[in-house]
Length: 289
Ligand code: SF4
Ligand code: SF4
Image 1 (cartoon, helix red, strand yellow):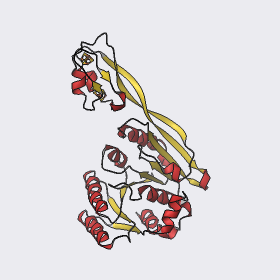
Image 2: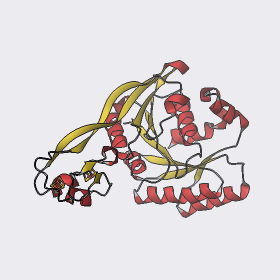
Image 3: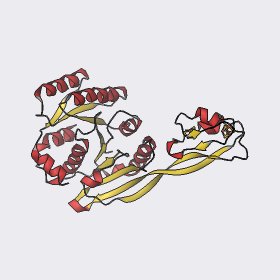
Image 4: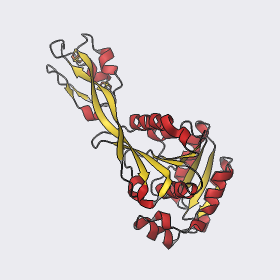
């Protein structure tokens, strides 16, 4: 069984993707690693790793399909739709806005004349990549991507997790890079992991959003540790981050400094060239855990 770690964080822009990628690159020098891009709204790890993506599967969703010959224009389907995916004007047939639909089935159940059947729509895709371009043969990437115009990423993250479960046993480590925030898509990505690494930075927003993500992992009963990125940026805020970690009975397990070399490596998409000394304490912590 591989060790499964989620790299997460309430706030966007703290360096989650960079940390996940560095962790995966570092561990893959000794172990077989599957890196999972669960930010279906905005996947970017394949860009950072210069990976060619191959389609693994399409993600489809069941949606309603109307038979207007049975419709009595009562409007109940529109009233029950919490996503505002059905527009109803008195005396007219309902109008379906498929991009808003999350496939909950409520409209089919409520319809008194069984005028609503089922159809399918593609909402996203899952991709697999070998990282040949960087000669990292022990590292594979699986990523999810939602089609533009759709809003709900949780079904795509759930489909991604199903694909991961099919072949995760070939690996020693599975590193899941979640989206930012604490919404359903993040919860889907976190479920079933051995522990989470909450990436934050010493800023007021970093402190606020760290509390949110640690509250979520506590509710989900997932052990969580803190990684303080850009650690030398503001000393007083770094102290506040430490005190938040203590409040949640956890600790800062690694600090990565604000260092020009990191930004140069990141902006030129050459993370594999970053000095390992900058993130070695993190790799050591993960190996021991
Ligand atoms: S399946 Fe659910 S979300 Fe989609 S249109 Fe029907 S009620 Fe709305
Ligand atoms: S609930 Fe059924 S009958 Fe009523 S408007 Fe919707 S589709 Fe037509």
